[in-house]
Image (cartoon, rainbow, N blue to C red; front, side):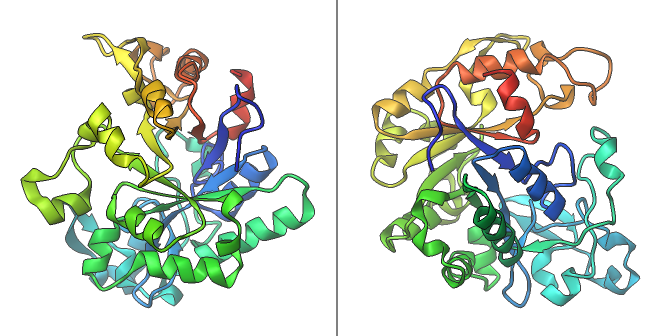
Length: 337
């Protein structure tokens, strides 16, 4: 799965075309296909009966109507997931049959009121469902769409008795995606699942996701306070340690920028050049046009939902020469290339 030219990074529809439809819905993915993406990005979690479910998080009160189902009121609970205390409803406490009764909702309706108009119209998807959508699209079009799969909370779910890596691999094999390395990328904020996939010889490109701060949750589980921080992995020593383990890294866009004391961007970091010098690819997440998501210096207007100076922000980020970008509005990328 390669970009079409040196100046055009891989175009990845972030949870589909989630700037136009509620994320991870069939309509969001189909719209992303139509807008010319190279790949789409599903986030994977799991149901209590081992079905691989597509949701941004295993806690689903913000993206489904679960709170409106009185039959599930007693499922509300509090959990500590990757060090964060969350109150709500969690996919691993429901069977897939139960999850299938829920309907999706816009995650940030205050920023995307247009998306909220589609609340309640679509059900959640399984990985199986998305593979079918992609296969049907690819069978009818010359340019194939790939997958950039994100494994969520792998260490946490393993401690709950769910091996997300194994479940995903089974699903991929059943539809022949274990034979499509040119279309398959797997990413994770944890390093052990990627090591495991590499050691198994999984035919996919492996990408290590990094938060701006903190440490990989699986490394905290193993090493506690001694775990390397994400910032260390962005250092020369950290990048050296990733060579041969993964094919690339995926960074928050803010970690590509040099900012001043007002948090305004005044230049770009050298992380892309340093990674490229070691043969590592670099992706970034997530390019979005709304003020609420832009670096402060690029915001304009009075409201977080308004579109600010996104073209200038995106051009600065793209000037680093990175290899892939995640976008909620895939059709906008051509405006800045």
